[in-house]
Image 1 (cartoon, each protein chain N blue to C red):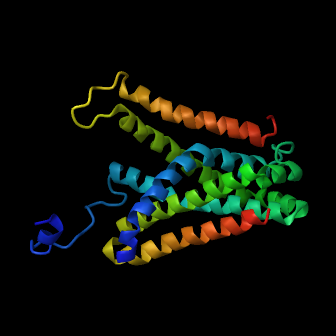
Image 2: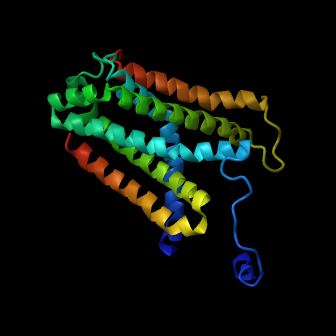
Image 3: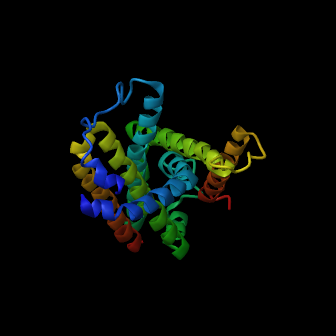
Length: 140
Length: 117
């Protein structure tokens, strides 16, 4: 009998949140902060899409859009989004070190210390960011 | 909710792919386009003509569609589970439709906007 079939017959208490969730314990805070990164990512995507829309409308629209983004509240929002997206990327890369190390089951231990393996994905991200910034900046 | 569960592997694939895309390119795009360009620090690289040429090329259009739509789907899947964590099972269905609805709207808007370049 499958677990799904038995779960209907086994009396269990109602599902509830763990005590202190979402901000009562540092691991909950970390988890919640990571989940919250979805909001700045969505906002950033909308902001970039607006830029593409302005580009499609012509030179005046593009310049007006850039001028609007220069206002302090939009710069603050962009910086806020950047901070959270950076946090997402670094944490995403940091998790990647465990995948690369293959620490599940009878696999051999990684040849390098685990923190060192975390540098690889984050280093890859930073390299791509720099290349993109060079392209966007018109150097290439 | 059955439909959402049926589509779960697709949502997961878009979430995973979107995570990579966001980590690899979004910080540079936000810094370059949403912060440095408005401050006038990208005048040469993101002048209208150069920015339009970059975005309107075949590679540019493909890049924009992949990056923006995957970013929407990644954020939507994470947001759905964030809503579930905060509001419990009562928020599961509205959270799923709200999140994936945003991603679908974002993807359609991306396709329409990029096609107009």
